[in-house]
Every structure is written in structure tokens, then in C-alpha cells.
Length: 441
Ligand code: ARG
Image (cartoon, rainbow, N blue to C red; front, side, top):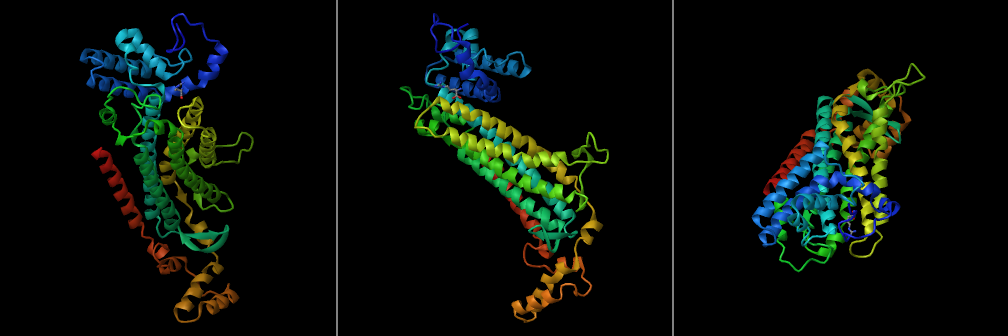
């Protein structure tokens, strides 16, 4: 078999070392993009028929073959491996092998440059849809726990030092709002990258009246990416933006998991993690370690690394450069890691058990000093004077009561006025808005 679609029949066999260097990992990564590449090829084929390059019979035959390729790939009987230069060539070779000349027409008006761009774009859209969905689920699980334990007192910290009485509702309500933002961010990113690069060929268009708009609609894109050079110049840029949307979610996961690991220590002992999220030690019989939470916390590093790696590749001139292939590995690794980690979160959050007594006991008397100062200020004493008086009498607060302190903290968003319903309303509205926009497509 000749190795490359672009070779003559009588071409010299390509040196394996060089071939492996160029394609090795890439063709394996293309397994992630293959289904999207097949879908885009079918749409391209239908588009070619609309401008008279392929007959209806040819389209029918090619689309049946593309379905078959997809089925065989999913079933594992068609293996995309280093026999091929990349997934794009594998599709063309399969079609040519089974449909002869009709298969050999498929690449009319198309380059692997727009082919990889459209397959990656569809993959990115799929990832961002999943990312948005997971962010929504995490926001909901945080909200549910926050509502269920809205008034459960826990110490509030600044600088990791005891500060003022707080509540589980305030702590987890914050993460509910964060993941609502992360949901909106994923949806906005999706909207931005929802444009079809297919039909831009190598980056300069072709001398054919391609039905680019029709093909874009067929593939479910919102609009065209108009400029052929930008279709190439945005490669890597869109990957970074999508990864950054995932990174923001992972940074919030990191912070929440930091809190969980801290609160699960014997020193704090505020929460108990469900057993299946902990592991034992191979040597210390007494240990129960929060490994899952720690791995979730560490995962943001994979995303940060992926963003940096792609940005380092992107120091390039205009147009397609083979360097761009190197954006694929960090993209797939980063997205895979984020989606896998985020999927663990909703059940983990739902499973947190609170040790009420320990949380109450950790609210010590001096933590009410801010309340005392504010109260005196509300009665007319200049705040600075009230502050100094409270400071002089830190231990002398009359029978402090955490519930009362929380109930009196009525400034909007605070423990006595959490406004969790506002966070939920925004989440529902944004979810609905995103759903409507996708339906309008
Ligand atoms: N594997 C290549 C990539 O990801 C496919 C495009 C190849 N195009 C080319 N002109 N050699 O960029």
C-alpha cells in the first residue's frame, strides 16, 4: 500500500522513522476526531452534489460507506493506526478502496487543512456542550446542599484564621454561583466558536462555487467562518479559549477540593467524605485518605499545562503550518481530563456529611466581635470607637449564639439573607436561554 494519499503509485516507500515522527501520535489522537471527520465528510459530499460535482447515486453510495466506516470504527473492526498518515487520509483511502473513482472525488474543493479544522471544531463544540452541562449539574448540587444546610453554622475564615460565624449555605452558595458563571462561560465560548471552517480548503478557497452555507447548516453550525486564512489562523486560538473555559471550572474545583480536604482533617473535622472517595494506606492501618479530592484538586494543572503548550506552539506566521498539529495532543489531554474530573463532582458534593457539633464548637467567642462593633455603630457610635471597644473586650461577648449572629447578618448575600433563590433563578434562566439558542440553530 502506498503510505500517503498525495504519493504517486510508483513513489519510493517512506522511511519509517520519518513517517513515525510526522504521524506517530497524531493518527492515534485522530481517533478522538474521527467520528466528527466522517460527519463532516458526509456533509461535504452532499455539498458537492449540490454544485454538480457528484451525482445523487454517488452521494448515496459514499454516505452509506461513511456510515459503514463509522460503525466499523465504533465496533473496533476498522482500526485507525499508524498504517495511515492521519484520520483524513484513512477516510479517503476507505472510500477509494470501496467506491473507486467516486471515492477519489471526495477531496474536490477540500484540503486536509480545513478538514482537520472542521473536525476539531465539531469536537470542541461537543466538549463545550458537555462542559456547560457538567457546570450546570455541579452548580445545582452545590445549590441543593446549600439550601438543605442553609443555616447550619460553620466558622468563616480569612487568612485561614477564625474570622466570623458563617454557614454552609454561604460556603456552598458561593460555589453554586461560581459554577453558574462557569456554565455561562462555556455557553459563550461555544457561541463564539460555532462557525464552520469547511470549504476554505488550504486557506485560500477554491475556484468552485462551494455551498459553504448549506454545508455549515447541515453540520449544525450557527454561521460561517468567512475568511479562509482566519480558518487556519484561528486553529489553536479556539482550542485555547475552550480549554480556558474548562480551566476556570477546574480552578473552582481545585478551591472546593482544597476546602474539602482541609475540613476532612482531624484538626478541623467538619465534614465526612463518602467512603468511596477515600482510600486506605498500604502501610498505615489507621489511614483514610482523601485521594479523589486531591486528584481533583491537582487536575487544574493538566489544563494549565495544555493552555501553555498550545500557546507556545502558536508563535507562527499566517496560514497553515504543520506545527499546528501539535495543538491536538494538549487539547485532547486537557479536555479529557477536565470532563472526567467534572463528572465526579455532583455526586461528591451531594455526599458530603456535616459534623454539626464540631463546626459549632469551632465558632469561638471572639468571632462575634465584628457583630458587636457593627451593632454599636448601628446605634450611633462612630464605627472606629465601636471597633476599639469590641477589641478591648474580645472574650466578653454576652452568651454568643451562632444562629442569632447568622440570622442578623442581613446584608444581601450574607448568612441572614443568602439569596440562594436568586442564584438558582439565574442558573435556570441561563440554562433556558442556552437551550433556546441551540434550538433556534
Ligand atoms: N495532521 C495534520 C494536522 O493536524 C492534518 C493536516 C495536514 N495538512 C498538511 N498540509 N500536511 O495539522
